[in-house]
Length: 110
DNA sequence: GGCGTGACTTATT
DNA sequence: GAATAAGCCACGC
Image (tube, rainbow, N blue to C red):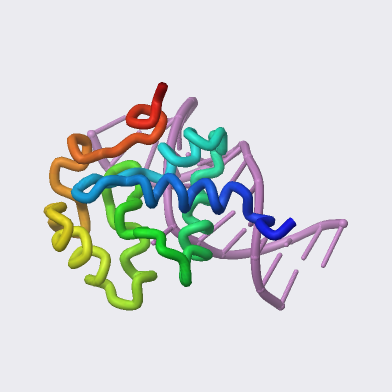
């Protein structure tokens, strides 16, 4: 198989579908991909997302904290990116996170 | 193939 | 309501 990381591709797909100004959570993606408790795998997928066109800065943990901001090369890169897209970030946390939360199992729900 | 770690989440104390 | 414990699966040694 060319794509061993099947769910990796799925994660990338979902993250890419995230509209600008919105954010999603690892758990939401994991749940959408039936990775019920595989939220960590989603995070790992983000690590592997290096070299892909995946806006990982739109992915945060369930409380809207930029857990992986440190992985962007700069501790403020993620925040800058989010703010550049219209997402207000304060204290490493997304403002009105619940309101800006983009849940694939809800937005992409049929 | 086993042990430890990890961009997490949920449940229990 | 905050802190602690357990659960889950993949990757590195």
